[in-house]
Length: 278
Image 1 (cartoon, rainbow, N blue to C red):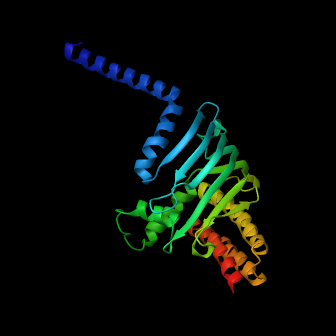
Image 2: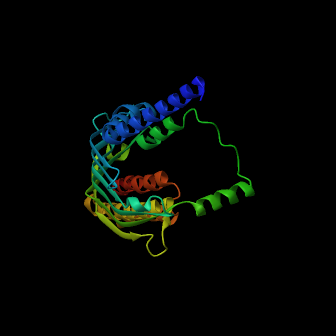
Image 3: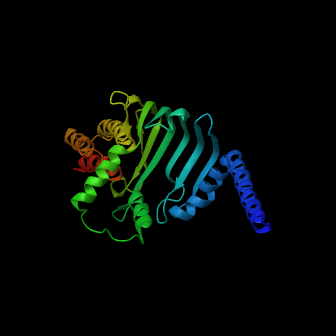
């Protein structure tokens, strides 16, 4: 064996050894890596401060556990309010199913999530953040041709599916502020929800369909909270009915755009106050 070939082989083995060491280090330091990514990397990507107090990921056990995750309001909105915050986020996955066509998730637990929906000059904080994220992206390329659309449908159908044994979202609170509340924040408590056996009957659902089911349930809770809010603020029955209808229309649309659906539900709060003023 020539000296050059020996050097090449040694170099390759050396590179493989380095990669293995790096992978092992990343495996054992994954919690630190994820935490730093959220606390330092995400703000650069999103343009707003993000923070998480605790990250505990156990790849072999299929556990993802985060505590005190916050996403700050974009510039121009109330600084001491978070656009989004969650006290605890926990996911338990059957790791043996990762390599199968259907991923099995034992539990998704979200404790004390909170969202601030603030409207200033006709634009909400959520819309402002989305506009900021979309800034600089290339314009849409026009309507997709039928072969492209057909190919995308086939890819979606062939993609991995999920079965979720249980989803629990507890102690949700929404803070709403706009001109109709005179700039003050109205806190709306949302009834906790628990969903079981998502996708089990059909042998699995696409991730998008599973998320839609969860969002529908959450919007139903928002709908109920907004409807009941009418009595608290002394609005007319019509105001409460209109508010409920705004949320229901969002649900009936299939939650194809979850941001617009949630926005429609929250905007209906303003309708309650307008009804009160009449």
